[in-house]
Image (cartoon, rainbow, N blue to C red; front, side, top):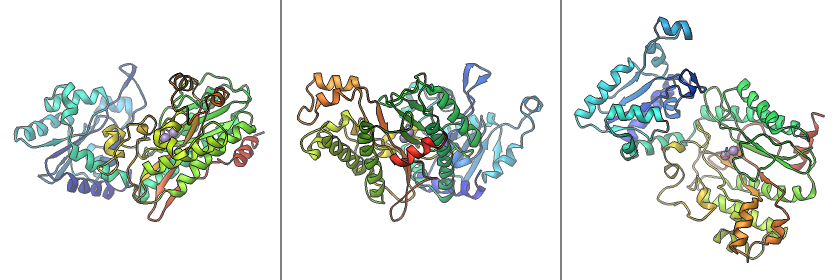
Length: 464
Ligand code: GLY
Ligand code: MN
Ligand code: MN
């Protein structure tokens, strides 16, 4: 945990955002896997971690703004728990580590909530994302499960997002640790990417690195020679020469801060000319948008900059034609780059996304596009110092999308479909880094992970 003062300070700042009422922040319970007692690895709720720090199941945090009191609800262990789980500190000692003086058993939670409700006080909570939490909120507040989303507190959502979006030095140090673990994962993947290896052999090895060096992976590993499928979790292909291997993987630290890195490498360790041609375009989009990152620029501007670099590079290769600005304005590039440039990163790999993507990524000044491709940009708004986010451009040759757009005669003035046909066996390339916005510009977090063609080829041959 961080110092108790950090949690107290965060709660005080949240109080000044939300102003009145009572804030309910539920920790996560265990979640069953294939029978009740066999559970997934426990993951605490990120808001609970942020404001209360304690990392075990069945806790609830309450901030009573009007009475200037905060509480942690949770049960002290009894002898049965000790037999199965070993001795645990008293709840009051645990709460003190988060700067909280008031503790009570979980059974007291309904009392404080129903008392506040009976007095007509506002009870603030954020959208739940697990079935158990839906039931808990429904029971506590008497709201039918299907209506819970209509009762969430926008003031609380906005307050939390305002705080969590700006990372302090301790959080940045944690994210750097997570990237350093990702360095080990990705360089291992590079060295293992040889013909004859099955994807799952690499995926399993690098997941083990995450577990051994910090926490679990920050999201299920995406690792495939079919990188044209954006979130490909199938790991049963055998690597063959001529394919590119996309590895999109990150770690959580012991404090649950995430990294999210993508590297794409040629199976066998040497880029052929066609791979080099596409790779250099994606690398240029990655590097130029990183260089352009500074306070005040919007992420939508960075996204469109990447889209133009991609369209221009594809035009040079004869895959696109016409005016690049027009092509991007109309969305023609999205056949090759059908996702957003990136998202916030922190305690969640898509940070805070459970509270509503538009609250995190957009505001009154920057609205979400409705155009295919740019519509999937999770973060569009203006950057501020302390933001941590991903930059992850890519180029993909998705046979089904090429066929669909071709049959619809979409953007025939901008896309050379005959040439695109010849890339249907290519796969995809994505290059993703984790960026901190500083007062004057930006910093790429963590130990640099090879991404130039030369550095990747050197790394891939280093294990031979
Ligand atoms: N890890 C999925 C992504 O890059 O957002
Ligand atoms: Mn990723
Ligand atoms: Mn990402």
